[in-house]
Image 1 (cartoon, rainbow, N blue to C red):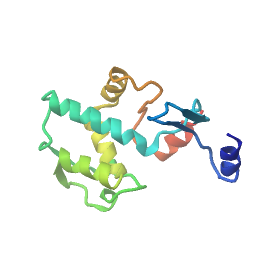
Image 2: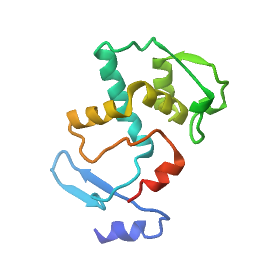
Image 3: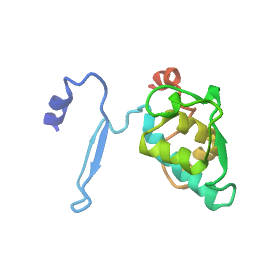
Amino acid sequence: MDSFAELTATFNGRIGLITHNLQTGEEFAYNADDTFPAASTVKLPLLAALMQQVTDGEYSLDDPLMLRRADIIGGSGVTQFLTPGLTMPVRDWAFLMMSVSDNTATNILIDQVGLDYVAEWLEEYNFPGIALRHKIDFEAIAQDVN
């Protein structure tokens, strides 16, 4: 689709896209096989893996998790401005991760769920090519691109 390439030519970055029309089955792909850093898109599979662990009885959404100074990271979210020592239930950390894309809450939940478990969940539920390699770390994310 030449017009899409022309439309994105002035964008300062890389774009990858795949669409699927559920009514006609028609697909359109643009740089669909390229690797991109996942950024906040990892939050949804992290939430799904967390909910699987809750369903399996590994812990409860009511279990408390504490904000430690070492957990705090910039970017999006509000918890970066809160006082270390704050304790909230797992469900509140998950709510902040999903509602305001809170990066600190995400890292706290990555520690709770575990990187290996998220990888196992992604594989079990057939999400090839998606990986959560580390906690949110802007320097590491910049190095993830090819």
